[in-house]
Image (tube, helix red, strand yellow):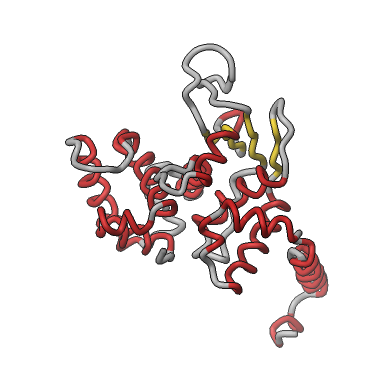
Length: 257
């Protein structure tokens, strides 16, 4: 026990001891990670497949922690382990360079059978939304189209991944300002260069001189998520086509892919 602890008042000392015991009990037990889950991750998640063995183990522990922290619910649909694992992987991948960080602004992910509209309805017109981070009375919720979630992992030539896209919005939201600057990840001295690069890349998109999804040009917020999808799904292509953007994203996420 640290020497400074013996000088603490007994009630506070007791609280610290209980907290440490609780925290130790909350550590995910990797032995509970099923072999069939590893098979699913190897088959479906290229990010996991390319990790070293020790990093695969850490990824699996993060999966278990995610399952403890976040409820995953199918809305009018039965979901399975593959669905849950893809949701968890979507959240873990962007934060994998930050083992100390957890999502503190989400309780539940809702999986819909298809795309939905601004009122979160899967029937009617303008059902063109594939993913959404909730606000207002849906705060701490995320909605994902289940087919779109799978498509983001199954098409290895795609630059899109709706799960990663929405979890990056949560990362952006964590500092209290949804502005395309993830202050929980990026150091202050890099904010201005990042904003300058965003504006340059958005101009290129608008001038049709870029292969980045045009949706990224709608705002700084969407550019961050769209560029992150590209970075995690097609890192080699991003490095080839947008070397400066690749280096900035590698720095932000502490990951060289």
